[in-house]
Image (tube, rainbow, N blue to C red):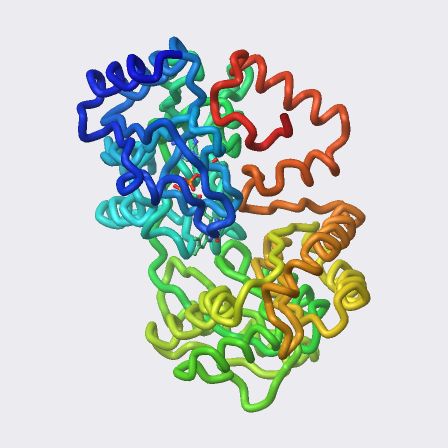
Length: 473
Ligand SMILES: Cc1cc2nc3c(=O)[nH]c(=O)nc-3n(C[C@H](O)[C@H](O)[C@H](O)COP(=O)(O)OP(=O)(O)OC[C@H]3O[C@@H](n4cnc5c(N)ncnc54)[C@H](O)[C@@H]3O)c2cc1C
């Protein structure tokens, strides 16, 4: 490859301002969100639309340049960070940021890949519809990145993850062809589902340039409550009861251990521990109601009273206003921030079948304690999806960095083994990227890995599309 010729051709195609080569301009694109990976790139390239993206990919192919797609760069697995060779380019999709169409009657919205998730939500709301994907990074992640990672978030229990919210895609293939699969169809049984292959592929099979997304009716009211319980098993019993009584109105069910709430209260003095006395577990429940706030409150109170009568719930707070409801969600969202304030943690984003969550916690906590005595478990997550952020913090008074150096590998290996034994996954919603690529391959069967490799080489025979991510080399 002649680098100078390649860069000149890129400038001719995209315009000088959108071919970034100076460190001062490229820096933020080359380091991942968690600052675990720092890459190097020949250039950061910023196409303006799908046709330009396709032409750019053809140019990369002609010069044999490996490509790393990037959206908001909020991913937590290093998937959007180039390697250190300086031979790869980052293709940033951020300039593809138009909402192309809202079809309120078909309950669909077509957005370009670089639209921020928050802007997609706002466009849906402007049409009095709901786009339910919601995560703490929604102000900076893109819908293309959400689909490429099959993002989850807080509303999966009711609405599903990004995959389930997508009806159609527009994709630039690794050869630089543009596939218009922007179908707004609920039914389409015409062969292999290409859309679903690109979703969750973390940019290894092609570049998503636009998506047709599902919208929903906006709920008339949302009602939130916090329930105090003695154990994860009680939380599971509450989930069953709430699903039986509220059905699809139950849109959030988040588990938080006592230590998580203590940590938030310690770090953020404005956030009190919510109950008069400590309880081993808390659950944040949210109902989204199509009738009214009064109906939602009545239903939520009936669920909680039934749970108290059965001895499942020990105490409960039902939010009396939107402000109080936001404050309860704020407690949940503050857990990762409180953790970070206390230094590095050993983090795991795992899922097991919902029914196995109590057994998983009961089996795994003692294993972790056996390896790292005194470690503090920061366990919280989307219990309704079986997804736990199962994090391990250094014992009080121990330097977090030294703790990580000593215990990260053995603790993570033991946690992942336990996840596998409970028929779970070591990456529930953050993807594999380069961070979990090898560990995932360790747990997948040779048949599964061979099928994945066959797909990769069928789509990308030259291996130029996000190499080194998802599958080991
Ligand atoms: C504070 C915080 C909270 C978070 N909470 C959640 C959560 O609750 N649930 C959750 O699932 N995730 C969560 N995340 C992780 C992250 O926000 C998601 O993974 C998000 O979907 C990534 O979107 P992005 O646009 O930033 O993608 P990037 O980080 O830019 O890229 C992620 C991956 O997708 C690929 N990619 C990006 N755009 C495209 C495209 N257009 N075409 C093809 N491939 C592409 C990249 O190559 C990379 O492999 C959180 C992150 C932060 C920082």
